Length: 500
Image (cartoon, rainbow, N blue to C red; front, side):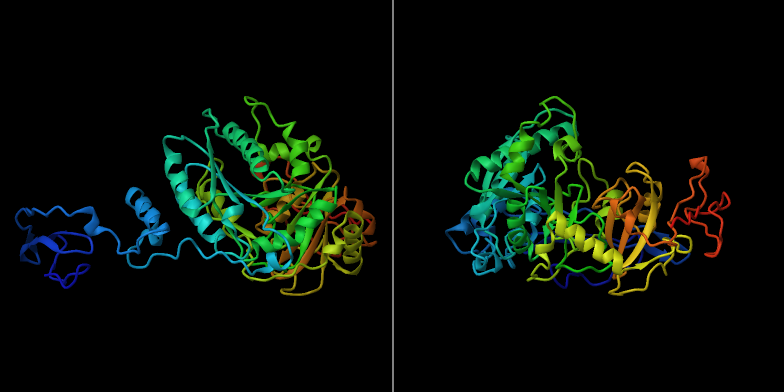
């Protein structure tokens, strides 16, 4: 019946025919059998019971081991793969992935005369995710296992045993601890404190470290990106961090991988932390039993102290973890899967000299003055023809925002654009730099943004209709014609205020 160790001829003719097979994986067949139904099409009778007996011989472990070379890391890999499962090509006998992954020495980071910035991987008891993260990280230019550290939270005698073994296989430093407690948010906040403390203790001579979560996949120019932006973090006291992540970038909107922007909100998911900022925040860190969500806490005004972050227009990390402490499949599918991700190996960042506060504000003013201003009373952000596609011309949309908390119109617009809509993020003084279908878009909150003075006279702002009963909310945007002169539109429409 068998034609190979993986297939057999199609001799079973009905859904109640049965077949059984006992074999050694990639080895011999020990027994097989089948029973067949009988009768006509109108009345099929199930065959008798199927019993299969076999006495496979015991095989010495050495006889089933992979025919890998002896010595060095191969012995360590052999021991690891005998204990743990699920690592695919890492433990394949026939097509094992090259490991340790070749570390690139001649790369853009070294050419800049800089040591690779230490990378600290924030981990837990999820070794398979960590393996995917490390496998990619070790393959990009600038990777250096001697400048990497994994800090993992979990049971040192339980789930962290496999994590430690995996990290040791990679030749990377490892620090494990048990943050304690059953509250996930509190535990993560404790963990991040430990991560930061251990990072700057082990890399005691370095001015900054990269923090990278275990469920992130990095771009080919990951280290080059940080090597080019790290000097800005060192020289500009108004900066809080440099992030590899852009909260408001979609993969179907294009983007310029050379572009770096300032943001008032901290972005995580692969970010550069300076020793100076670490020393500022660690003394204020929430107490051991004080409930706090660590990243929300770091964004508090009294902690961030007006400092800003640099973010790329095109992200240098991709979030692949589908489930986590604060993550569901739905969240991953709606907010992470479609994030833009740079695929170019060598990118020279542009206009880094325009990222100081004064220079950046001047650059934004120039973009506003030279851009095409949309009529807020005529455009529909939910419409697929909102902007011309793949245009190099900057377009500007002014939206109602009386103060920072007045985010109703903003949330409606970013929902239409299928961007992050859970809170205000990635803005600079309430100006958002976006990209829609390849075309740059500046969205400005009027009149709360200090850039509001640059709104041309006669340009209408976009105001989302706010129903009295949210549960009966009408469509987000219903429009009158653009020549409608009144500043108050019917209750089923957008309010167009012709401020000039």
